[in-house]
Image 1 (spheres, rainbow over the protein chains, first blue to last red):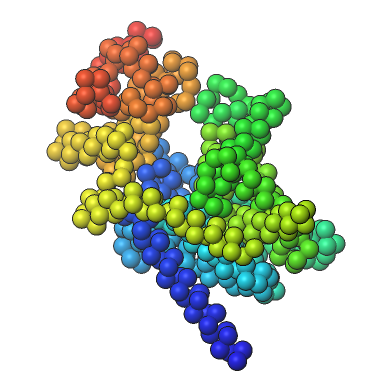
Image 2 (image 1 turned 30 degrees about the vertical axis):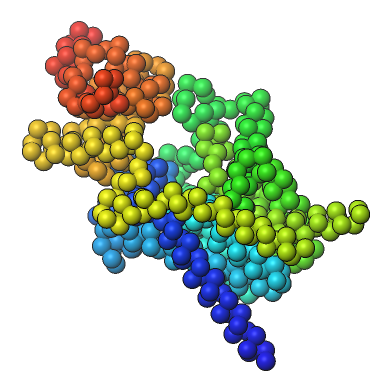
Length: 346
Length: 161
């Protein structure tokens, strides 16, 4: 009986993945992403494959690259080595990873949220921002896959896997520091000194080589951009306190009043603030449910904190895509809590 | 309560339909072999300029090691095979001028914000140092490629010495 139930559950997941593939295809294109990031990563991969190291081969001086994380170029170099130099292979990998994220969401949350699991998965596969990024040769989807994998390993108490995934995530996107911070604060709040020390020391050892390399080739560019008043106006100098407050207000407005709705429901604009508030309240309410919920809450808060501090010229819903499934989860909790609250009033 | 959530999911799905509809022509064009179907007009002009540069390089009109100033240096190397640098994002025109005259070719765009703010005015103010070699067809061109007149730059350097 139990086995039968389990099988039907898996069948539903297979059906969902099939539906997801159809939706991805309907939103798909075969063109290279024209924002510039994909070209940089591909050229860095070409640089690695040509034996030149990690260099900006488009620049006449061919300097060591000190802006982009090495994770994606190394992945592209590996794909190019196996399948030939064609960006389409990266696109197909993104589609595969998007489907695997759905599977990971299923595996991470199936014991935690009951029937709401299917709402979460349906919200995820019908989200326009996710469908959009499933076709781009960008880091968002591989990063989301790796951080979900780290949470999956953590739930399974396979801590080496978790640490390796966190280190990998940092080498794909610097914002992985938000999840690393969430893990460390979680252990700090639990007063689990042993795990705090092991996680902290292992992750530090893992991220140190690339961090040292960055310092040696001219310092951390991300920190420089973070502290610049405007990355596209060299003359405007460093950020001051008043600029910082202005930046926080500007970015908060963008992420909470405009973009939040895009990555949770397919809605941009005035509904965003309501959707984001429900998501945050829902994540807060879920703190009692499990240790995973606590970790996710910390992660989302730290991620949003980084986003409101970042350059205003770089505010975009793409920076919420990597926490999108967690915001969806919060939205589901928040939605139910609010309905219960409203019902209680009448 | 669950019914409301199913309605949310259905609504979410319905909101996707216009996006799929808009994407269908792009998908069709892509499948027919046109891989620049959905690229914005300004970027399309830039890609055509890179095609032109690549052709000039292949027929020997432009040196293989020529350096191009461009708002998207990665694109220039990816599509034209020419090494490229961006112009400095500063209103200090002297700094922009002294940077760009070190290159061989300059791509100025009229639809690209950074080019409009930092580059185009410098090119207009010092037009004697730059010679247009390619432009788009409009009356006011969307994109122009300039060659740096090295003879004039040399004269300037000699005068400064």
